[in-house]
Length: 210
Image 1: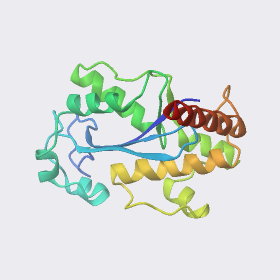
Image 2: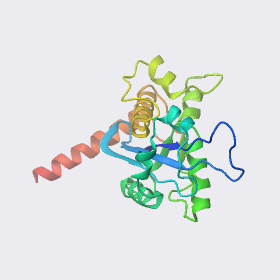
Image 3: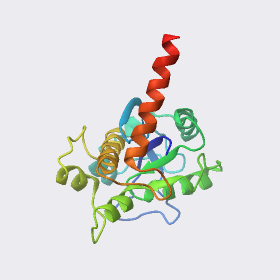
Image 4: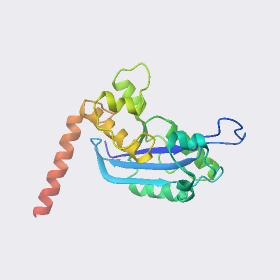
């Protein structure tokens, strides 16, 4: 199945009144964790605040939802730098980009277009984990990440709407799904993946002993 780069993007939020006509959400924080074939989050993580290019002033509504302050984004990095860092985390082109919902891909695509940047990943190698969770658990509607964590008694990492914490928590939900039989269409079952992982680990040990 390959590896998963689980990401979470926090976006700017407009004023509740008087929103400029040309306003669009910009990425203000990026969090990511690399997860292995069985979904388990690794110690390879990434976290950064991002300087918005078009609408740099944070609103009160933005702080109320995300907790991101003006000084956070003022001291942040450019989106180009952050995307380069994320690409370096991806072991190969077959790495799946995973997020809870489809808004992360849509906003990233929109911002890249507005900024004149190339979309940094393979568009079709995107996994909407919220939709997969809904299908796997046979729910009538999508669940929030918080609900998925709580109803499966998964220990919550950090706080909600912190980009890195959300990415790690999403990875934990994906690992739970894989452990309980979830299989991406056209990919190996959990047992087959575990066998491949065990075989690879055994080969590494043998090569070291030679």
